[in-house]
Length: 235
Image (cartoon, rainbow, N blue to C red; front, side):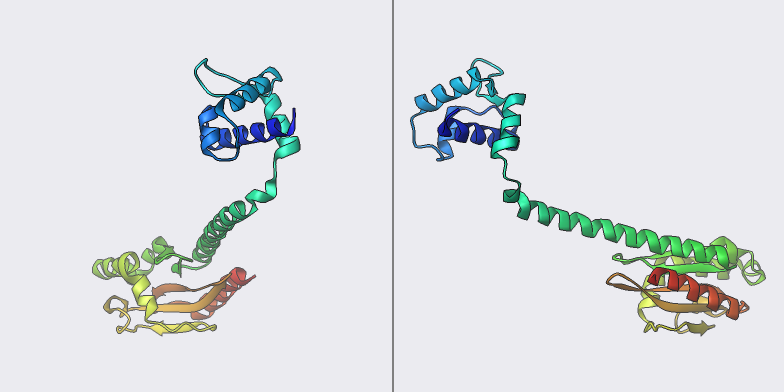
């Protein structure tokens, strides 16, 4: 195989990899890589076929690489660095999606852990999403304050499902635990509720993580639990 045949084989394989369509002499000439006649290209393609580097799936079709052709391509012609910029851009995009997915998983697992430690609702803003994870509503339902007033319960559920994200936007987050006890200005439904909240950080995202329950709650225990789970996200 001479230099021109090598360039021709490389061009055919590059085009076939890109299109999955058999490559003919006309397409090779359109690429303007070869300043020879169509007849010369057809002759060279026929020789590459005789050498076992190409094959013709149909009589009227162009050529496609054989296994032997691919092996020569990988060993002699392939230049991975030509694709580095394209691959890097794709990798960077997918890597960020991967880490964002892992961020959300970590926060969800932290909320689940907190819900298992306390007898109230645990919640956190979701990294890279305008929403809030919350778990443990069944815990709160077992509290006497919630069992005594079904309308109050439905109001709290409505806040959790529809407006907790907007409510949290009103709060200036701090590194230490903040306490909101029966504060109607946050929501009328929270008149008999307390909320503990603190800031968490995960990579470049800052969010809120907290506890919601009746005013009668174990503030000391819940504060320690919240601090510990927030620290888990920080590690």
